[in-house]
Length: 271
Image (cartoon, rainbow, N blue to C red; front, side, top):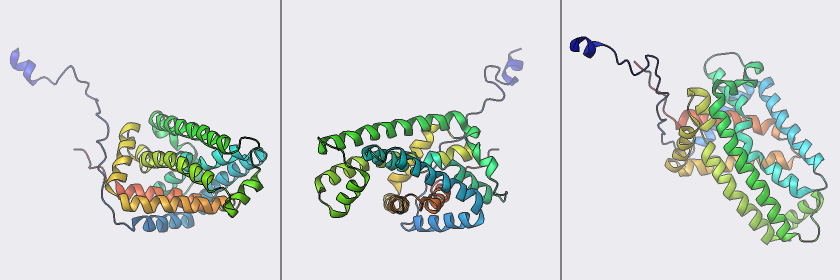
């Protein structure tokens, strides 16, 4: 009887117990790797123009809608528009999926990318909440900075842009962009590879965010260049009254997928 018990499979552990994907291993990449990611992102845009531009038009439409809705209260428009940098990784999921499908030799079809979040809805939802909280705190901090420097009357859109061009309020600009940089850094560090990991491997949200922080710590020079490229392409979109986002956001979204592929080692096949 004792021998039979020893040879019997562990009855306390379910046969289909799956520990989940292993913790992702981060690789070092060359300092110029982000330029290669942008090039590959542009290649994906050319290969999948219609679905990619669909997401680009969505970004542009959202930006224009915010500008029109809050045209008389630019302090809100500034906070919400700059939130693109915080919420962008979540909003670009469809672009990641397009790059993934092209990589696998599948068709560049828009419909499957619209509901790609269902593949790992729970963890993507947790990550969305994290980014949402960061965004809401940033929006509040942005309003506080405006209130501190404009105690009598908030500037209009034209007034604010004019002040930026003439640099008449360097103290305000320094504080505003300094505070924004803190929130942008937190969002960027948490999202370098997070959503691609969750879509590709069904990774949990915590491990995905830790891997993103690891990618940043292990590759400071490439990540700095990558952040500069993201901000630059986003600013091009903003300075063209959001029209440029039609092209720049798909390029950044596709490039993010290739960043994930370079930064995270492929998962070994299980025996």
